[in-house]
Amino acid sequence: MSRIQNTMAALAASNKKGLIPFITAGDPAPEITVPLMHALVEGGADIIELGVPFSDPMADGPVIQRASERALQFGVGLRDVLQFVREFRQSNQKTPVVLMGYANPIERMGQDTFIAKAAEVGVDGVLVVDYPPEECEEFASKMQQQGMDTIFLLAPTSTDERIAQVGKIASGYVYYVSLKGVTGSGALDLDAVAAMIPRIRKHVKVPVGVGFGIRDGATAKAISTASDAVVIGSRIIQELENTPRENAVAAVKSFISGVRQALDE
Image (tube, rainbow, N blue to C red; front, side):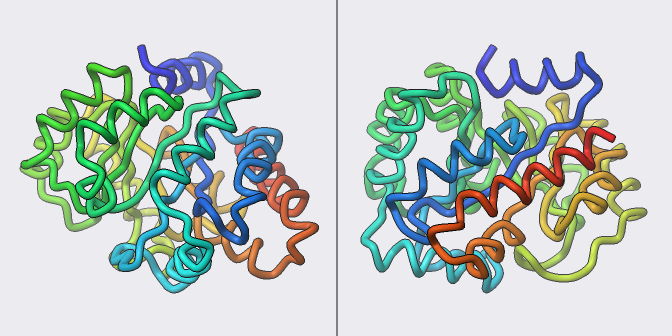
């Protein structure tokens, strides 16, 4: 089993819910990306989603768009992101890391080169927003051959046909986008999420994480009653935006610790 699959299985066995925080690599500065990753783990993260900065992050709202812009101003690209994972792995061999981003940087590097480099540095999975599942079977197969998982998004508008297509090739977990729209937008409808998860489980055998719109421990706890894991991104980026850089690592650890505590109550 992959590191993600082992982590999810261990959570299920201990009747715990997964906590999957997202940060953008290189934001607010490249030198604190790896310290932030360690702080997330110390705060109780089970899996880290590490955003690959991209100039046109179409699924992301203004908060994560700003994070990408800041990282790009530092010149942070896919190769730098892989290097961050390599540095993280020097002292953490346990926590899964999922790269989340868009197709263009991977296509520019070349899928085979990317997969080889990602496996080498210790990446555990990839979520490529604009790789449609109908065109992704070969990529997912090559990822699995290297012990890595391919994560896919599902949305409130996903048809049973699309959910079934994702179910054929998804591994690790699937990420259910709980809102129509971009990251960080709108208000969660908990009843709607709870109604959708059983539809997903009919076709998808891997765990289900829910994200978009989760802003605090109480919301995370409520969502976790229907899901296997919760994903938090924009709210963490806002924490970084509103905190002096020298206090950023401590602030993120404190925030994630609060969410972890709420999930475990």
